[in-house]
Structure formats: structure tokens, C-alpha cells
Length: 445
Image 1 (spheres, helix red, strand yellow):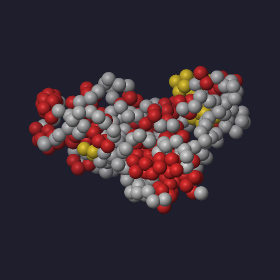
Image 2 (cartoon, helix red, strand yellow):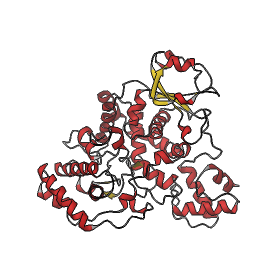
Image 3 (cartoon, helix red, strand yellow):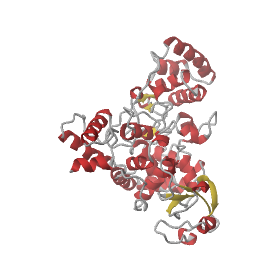
Image 4 (tube, helix red, strand yellow):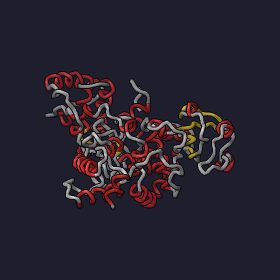
């Protein structure tokens, strides 16, 4: 999303509070808390203290921070940031070393796909999303007329990025971006985001007290980085402010505008699940390796139930170009896992956060919001992931066995993981601390 040192999709990796927060709090056994790039999307509270990520770095040097801010202040002045804005936003600020610990953490690339999707596309998020579609139907229809992006896709992004406005993140954007501007990797990138954030504050688009979000600087209902806000955010409610924090219409329209600018094609699908022959050569897979549907059909690719692909029935042509992805290949080398032919709209979603697992979560959640089914094929694991309702059940079972895990909230934090590991040891299993279906079913007995 930044035009500077990273491609558009790469900047989005830092943006989303929901995904990192969710992976840290719910998915990753060796993490202790959620941080952000994005989308936690838990209906319960989501911890967002970046400092809780395991880190052995020395304390950030206050003198170095002061020198860096001095240089940035001169740059800010040259870009029209007033003395009053600088003083209001930077007065008494100290570096937050915790955000540096989150800089290299990308759960989209570390978490098994079956855990990742179980957390992001669960019963809670589907039911809540359908309620949001009904509640905001008029706004979403107007958004679709203007930008061409269907309501389910817009709401799916909203659901993953902030759990429909419940989880924005709690870290000071100014402090986080100031810290990242002066320490760690990618300082030039974060300096531009920091200066852009000051411009947003000065122009009054967002209330000062609402300048909170992810460790990386993403904020609002659908977690925009400041530079993306400036280039893409829309004043859809007509109040003269582009407020993606306090205005749901502005946030939904801004999200649709981002996808449109990323190449979204009105009225087209993102893709569909397919079945592969047992001996399929998976070396030809890849989102970017697009081939005509006729070629995939000739290679034996079918619908997931084994029926032949009929392009016309899918409102496509035999020459429509699609890429084939098999997400579980990252974890298990097998063609017998869910596979998907993906179209340009999948690429538009991918640009929001540069991970195929993220794009698939948005695409699948959108399908489920429309009433579509779960995936036909099973993931190649004997211990599937579980959603938040099942995590809450697991936590209750742990409490019944005498474990002090704190609140039953569906977030698998350090105490829940320790309790799971203890139960695994009691059962004679290797200690992992992972919340999966196997341990849940064992404790149900």
C-alpha cells in the first residue's frame, strides 16, 4: 500500500490488527499475546500489547529517540505540520520497545492453514457478519453501486480486520510509529507513515483520542495504514471528514475503494474450490501462474465433488485465466488437500494483506456470509483447528479440571496454553499447548 520501499501488498502486511492479534492470542503456541498486523477478530476482548511478544532486545535508547525525533520534527515542519500539532501529539512521548518485537512476526506465514481459517471463519464471525449485512444493507448497496464491490466481501474484510468494529487495537499510533521510525528495520517506511499520521491528526479526520490501533500503525474499522488512508479513504456519510474509526459508512466505502483500486472486477467471483487427481503435478500451482480454464480442465481439475467444470455454468469462459493454489502445501506436501482456482478478484483481496491464507479467509468468509458451504475437502491433518465457540468450551473444560486460566473468552493465552500442555502430559501426549479438536474431544470424555 506504500509506494516507497515495498510494493502495495507488502505494506499491508503491517496493517491489520486482526490477523496478528488473532494468531498471537489464539493460534501460536509460543506467543504470549496479540500484537498487530491485524485482524484479530475475536468477539471477546483481544489483547493488543505488543510488549508481550517474547523479546530479548535491550531497552530503546531515549537519547537516540530524542535525536531521531529532532530530525523528524524538521521534516514535519517542511511538510506543513504545525508546532501545535507536533506538541499535541509528541509531548512527553517515550519509545515503546514492545512494538519492535512484533516487527518480524507474520502469523499468516507461520500458522497451519487449518488453524488460521478455523479462527477467522468460524460460526461467531459468520453469524455476526450476516447480522451486519442486514443492519447496514442500505449503506452496503450504495457502496456496491459506487465501487462495484459486493456487500459480503466488504463485510468479510470488516469482520477479519476488527471483528466488525469491536477490536481496533489499543496502542497509541503516534508512539508506535515514532518508535518504529527511530529503531529497527524499515525505518524509512515507518517515518513516512508517522508523518502521514500527523497530517491526518492535523486535518481532523479522526478524533485525537481515537488515534489508537495496531503496533504497526494500522487503525480504524478495517485497519488502514496512514498512507493508505490518505490515498484511499472516503467521506461516504458526507460530514466532511474521512473517519474510518467512528463512521461505519466511511470505513465500508473506503474498503471497497481500496479493493476497486487494487483491480476488483464488478460482478465477478474470487474463484472456487476444485478437486485434483491423486497424481496431480503441484509444481504448476501458484496464484500468479494463471492459465486458461480449458488447460486446467485438460489436466484433470474438476469441481470438488468430482463433477466436470463447466465454465458457462460459472459465468466464465473456457479462456478465463485462473491460478491454482493448494494452501496446505506449505504444511503438508499433498494434492489431496483443499485446492482452489483463483481469479483476479482474489488478487485484489491479496493486496489488502500479502498472504494467500489471508485472501482465502476473506474470500471464504464472504462465501459463507452469502450462505455458501464449508470447503468440500478436508485439510490434511488429524487434529483440525477449532473456532472461538469451541475454544470457549475447551477453556470451561480446563477450568473444570482445576486449571486457573482466567476469563473464558475464546482467546488461548499463556495460561490456557499451559493448562492444555499439562493435560497433554497427563494423557501421555507430547506437550504442545495447542488448542485443537483432538484435545477438546479428549477432555469431553
